[in-house]
Image (cartoon, rainbow, N blue to C red):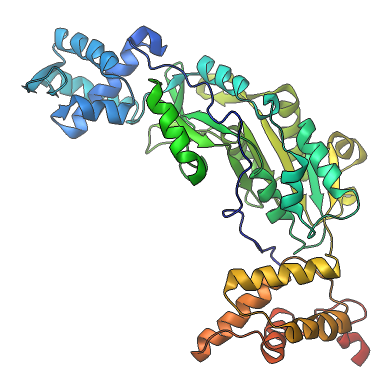
Amino acid sequence: MTEVDYSSTESMPRPADANLMPPLPPQPKSLRETGLERQLVVELIAKLMFVGGKTHLSVLTTRLRLSINVLREVLDFMVTEQMAEVAWRGESDIDVQYQLTGAGKQRAGAFLERCAYIGAAPVTLEAYRAMVARQSWQAQEQRVASDDLAAVLGGAHAGPGMLDMVGAALHSGRSLLLYGPPGSGKSTLALQLGQLLHGLVAVPYAIVVGQDIIQLYDAAQHLPPAPQHVSHARQALERRSTDIRWVLCQRPVIHVGAELDAGMLELRQDASGGCYQAPAHVRANNGMLIVDDLGRQRLGAPELLTRLMQPLARGVDQLSLPGGVHIGVPFDSALVLATNLAPGELLDAALLRRIGYKVRVGPLADSAYRALFRQQCRVAGIAFDELALNYLMQQLHGAQGRPLLASYPHELLARIADFAGFAGSDAQLTVASVEQAWNSLFASCDMPATSLCERIA
């Protein structure tokens, strides 16, 4: 059975952050302070104007994420070199439009043929390394608190010693393996643990290595500050002028599953974008990397863990660029693994020993399952009925020996809503609707050894 998300991680509030704002770099006031070569900025400006025609200075600032002072410095050079010219000037110094000259258009076309990237100016690899080290989640004074962890685990997963083991793993920064049967809630638990990482981080749009640009920021994975932090972050940014090549984000929680292969752990050339795309584990820096369905990837679990854990232990990974060039990029994230396979069959003793903490996520206790079912009724907007839940617990789970897994309440209630929607009626929790949903979820012979099918046989 596919493991489902039985509870919402989006609605769970993050813990209070004592030090919300990372020390963002100041806004560069000159080209030298950006750390970039003048030729790189010239090419970015030329390509943008080649595509857009007459371009206002404010548009250049917005698209390239560079200050007006830096852009003026480079544009003055381009005007002197007869690559660009002022197309229109308003009353103020910043109310000005530029366009390429004929010679500038020829050179811009050549720039585009060599590299099609048109976007935010990158930061240097050295600046990125320094920022990752400065805002490392392991270096934060405020760690995951036991109360925060207990609120996530609640009674649903708080088996004997589980809270202590998970808490110790997050506190130490060592890797964590969650294992158990399909549907036990390992994936959801891992995602919820990711929401407990404190604070915000600065992520660059891109980094530059020599002549190559590596795009790092991904809006789908680097989420903006949570609503309760937006005003705080905005006020802090307004109080000081910062380098807008960096984006303020929640600590990333990157989730990969069975689709992961060896190529996804390397730089990927984006021909259409004219740059390289950073791999998932690099985008997870200063946050959490979740590898789900361990053992079902396109490369073996031993190879995958060796590929990840050695660089993670060193805090740096070696990535390859064309021409045999190798670059060292930071690797700073909490590593959480999840599998429904037996760890001893999946990995040998040496690799298991290298995983910091191993935690089994199994069936829920009776009271925890009932509490989860009530909570899922509220989420689904279905009125709770005690009689129907008792029938589920005693006549279905109990009689058939089906374990109380965390995914079942969500699955059953979703099916009740499906049947009601098809019938054109409101979803109701009744004995009949529960049994109908149950029969649609499980095949008649898809049961444990003590199942009805075996008794009939």
